[in-house]
Every structure is written in C-alpha cells, then in structure tokens.
Length: 515
Image (cartoon, rainbow, N blue to C red; front, top):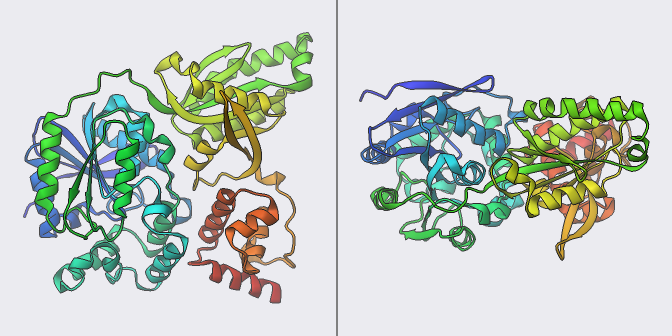
C-alpha cells in the first residue's frame, strides 16, 4: 500500500509531521490521543479503515504532537503544555491550507480540541469528541493508578503490555498485540511515554466547557475501559447544545471495535452541522496591570511619570512577545489579552522585571474566561475579575484565579494559596505566582546531594514530607498550601528526578541523607 505523503508544519522552532488524505468539502483535523505515528497508523487494518472512511467524505488532516512519531523530539522533562500543543493544531491547519475545519479529538486529543475550540472558535466549524474527558484524574485514572501505569511502562515500554489498559478486547490477538508494541516503540521513547502520562494526568478543563460555542458531537462507548462513560455525560451536560451518542463496546481506541458506527455518526453530524450564529466569544487569558501603593502617588513627580510612559511604550512589544495584545489602558489599569494562562504568566514575569528596572510598583492579576473579539475583551466579567485581582495585588505580586492556575497546571509554574475575593456576589479562590528565588528555605532535609540540585527549595521541602509518608492533603495542611499546588510540586519532582513513583523519590532522598 502506498502511504500518503508526509509533510512538515513549523510550530515555533519545531517541525510537526502531518498528512492530508481525501478531497471532501469539509476539512477534518484528527487530533490524536496518547500514541501516534503516521506511518504505523496505516499498518493496522482497523486504523487504515478508519482513515479511509473519514477521508471518503472529508479532506482529512492527521498530524503528530511534538515529541511523538515522526515529529521533532523534545526533552521529556520539558514537554509542552496544552496551550503550546493547541498552537500546534493551528500551525498544522495553516500549513495544510485550512482556514476553518472540524476537529475530531480522540481520547487525550479531546481536551486539546476543547481548548482550541474555546480559544479559536473562528477556526472551528464543528467539534467531535470521541472517548474524551475534561478531567483526567476524575474520569480516567486517579493518582495511584497513574503511578501503577508509569511503573509498568518504566519496565516494559515497547512490549505491548499497556494494550490491556486501552483495548482489553484485543489483548488476546497476538498479531494486534505485536502491532501495538511496535506502535509504542515508534510513537515515543519510554521516558517520553512516562512524561506524557504524567502530563496528561494534569488535564482539568471543566471550567472552560460553558464557553464552547461550536456545534459539538460527543461519542463514547458504553463500557469504555479507559475513560469512564460519566466523562461523556459530564461533557454533554456542560457544553451548550452538545449532542451525545453512545456506542457499544469497551475498547477505547476509535479504530478498534465497531469503527463504522463511530464514522457513520461523524459523517451524519458533519454534513448537517452549521456554524453558530451567536457572537463569536472565545476563551482567553486576561492579564491586568495596576500601578500600586506609593508608586501611584509618586507619579505626580515628573521623573516617575516619564518612567511610567516608558513602561507603557514597551507594553505592546512585551505582549506581542507572548502572542498577545493590549486591549485597554486607562485609569482602571492596563489589560492584556493572551491565548492562555501560561503565556499570561510568562508575560507577567517579564513585566514585573521591567517595572522593577524602572522603579515602578506593579500589581498584576490573571484570569481565564470567555471574552469578545478585539477590544471587546476589556468588558465583561472576565475583565472585571482580572482587574480586581490586580487591584488586590501588592507591588511585585501576581495574583491568579484558581481557574487560571488549574488550566496552567503542568507548565512548571509555582503557586501558593493567597485567599479569596468576592466579585459580583461570588467568592473566588485566588493563588499567588511564586518566583522560585522567593521560596522559603526547606525544612527537615539534611545535607545536600547532587541528584537533588535541580529541585527548587520548595520542591525539596515537599519531597521531605513525601518521604515521611504524608499524603498531598496532609502536605498541603502542613505547608499551608492548596492541594492543587502540592499536586503540581509532586508532579514536577517526579519529572525532574525521572522517577516512576513517590516511593522511588522517597528512597532517593533517604540515600541522599545517608550519604
């Protein structure tokens, strides 16, 4: 069988592999799940049948995430967050000449598709979610199950032993099991597979579901072995106008079991789905800035007024560096719009440094929510929350809504619990972005071991409590942090130390203290 031509799309400095098959009137972007390799897809009769069926009524664009398959590899310790991978979808669409497309997000590809549809509704004709979920730990695997999966992958990646977790109905098929083992090996390295599993476990996009404004079809097998059927019911309840169809079977991959039933539903949906006529709101991160405290009074001084002018003159350039723009500047503060919270937080760090260099006190707030296009982002509840956070922030502090912190989870950012604020009659949980150099000294860790040097002081402190056998909630109470923050620290510790479990991290610390 002659394989389709594989092309490269540039996303930043990396190349992403993609293929285009079919000449149908609808562009359909297939956003893959955990594993992918464009050439290996065609080797399995079931996968090849899926691709041929989809390309029979669409112009099918399938691609591989960075770090997997035929795309450029990345350091497993620094895998990209969902926002970066969302940009990869846009880069592939641009390279394939697709202005608007339907998205088919399968398994892990479903949350990535959700984030893209919320952020760029103008690029999305319709959304199909197969075997998807909004929160990994709730509907796929809890933390203990993730560590068990990681431990298995650590010793047997590339042997096909993960097959039973995805497609138990095919586990007794030696030919398929051999293909699955090859699929593992050629999709990513063992360390990358472990890092991907841990990163995927951080996915929680429940907060953005009400902001989806494109026609949406949810497909889920009634007895899915990987993603709980309740995940589909939750998506259907919280995405406005979403349609839910149940499929029979328990195997998780869309290309196993009754694939034709899934494709028939997709074809029927896409050929009748029409673009929404509602105003094109989209998901965005807003970064609000306010000159605070003594610095505001000091602006009466001509020199400091000039410094503030210099700050404003550089504001647009700083925003553009992170793919954003200034949408408002006035007495209430400055407001920047960016595609996601990790970019807003990166921009906030740069602006803090700029303000310090100019002698200006700057409080900042970050919130994620639904906004109107262009300068319309400056109005509405999302803008009010961001400005309120900036108003509460003291000089040099960046306050982040819990929603923004959760969406940014897994990006290497560090937060501590700050408290709550009341806006429009509702109470909003707030966290504070913590520069690593401001972390408190570690308590209870004796000595110094080279293996631990790339942990932050806070991470070493958390590691010490993990070694004492404390749970995340117990650590959160001990250190007066949120449970979400502790979970982030533990994830980062395991990634940085390249360890499969909390027990392995505790053992490493014990060896460090004994040496």
